[in-house]
Image (cartoon, rainbow, N blue to C red; front, side, top):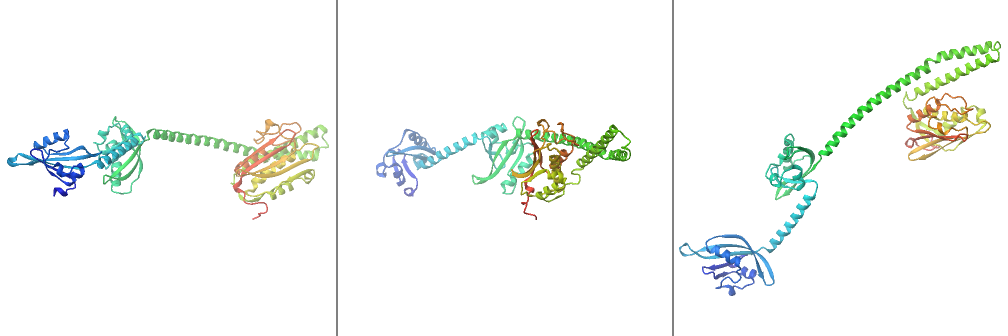
Length: 489
């Protein structure tokens, strides 16, 4: 039986001489049975002699390890020694059982190296790492210990949920049980940790289940997000305060705007009747009594008539400005080429005959509010004709180009131009050019153009030099452009 054993078996009698040396013992030691039988154990080292001394004293020994040389090679052996009972109960000999554990030792060493490396990597990460099965922690890394304030020994001896704030424990325990059973639960969520010193920190958990040691085990990471939560809370409060301030300021601005519009409407509407009366009576005086008046009186009456007509025009423009956008946008397909031609046909033929107007088409069709577009470009063309230079034939050019998702339209003239210090103000309400010789204006037309363009989602600006003409630009979103001039729909 011993001869066929897969491990080395050696039997020693009461005098320590070999009486059994099986085949596996030969393979392990390189010593043949005939060389060993009847002799004192030939390769016994001092430490082995001490073991044998204890065994002959009646002690059973297990798990002893020693190095055995075989030729030039050393192998690790694991040894168990058992005494044999002789006559009268005395120890009559011992039996040694040993086997080669060199590969096992090498594997164990390699595994230890890997585990040490993994442990080192785990300890170097900023995330807290842990393993548990619903009870005490099986493993925690350095970051997790630092986060909670507990030692490795404390964490592996206490229930895992005890690091969680009491109010959050029911949720954590319930989800852990379901997760270990394979049920669907959130893999990431935030909880409060109760630290060893009694303080509370917010942690973001990321969890999964793995097979560890043949059993389902929860592996997780914990990130300290306390500062992030604090910043988020401050941002939330700041955002709420900003919303409140914006709502307050918006309300105030809307109130001011409403009051302004009411005032403008009241002025432009309620004063029209007395203005019409002044204009009407002035015309009656002029028609019926101008022969009675001397030259000075006639001039005074003409001044009254012109002033009342200018005021009526200003109030009319004010009403247009106030009413802009009140009805909402009426979107339709507008052919810009046709629009410009119709606007030009509305001017005095005698003025057109003295001007050179160039339409640099083709122009695209645009889905827009035609009324607002007409209002914008009628004001710009009106300005070009109104502010032409004396003695110089008027030249007007209308064109367009595409730019970064937008359509830019322009109206260029060779008129009087605008002083540089007035370029930023020409679109403000009641702003008039103060250049000597400039025609009278209500100061509302360009303000109407600007408000209309902004209602269409665009922008308007001007470049000009005094005496060198002006170019007005209107920029509209290109996505409303739906074809070329030949596409009439």
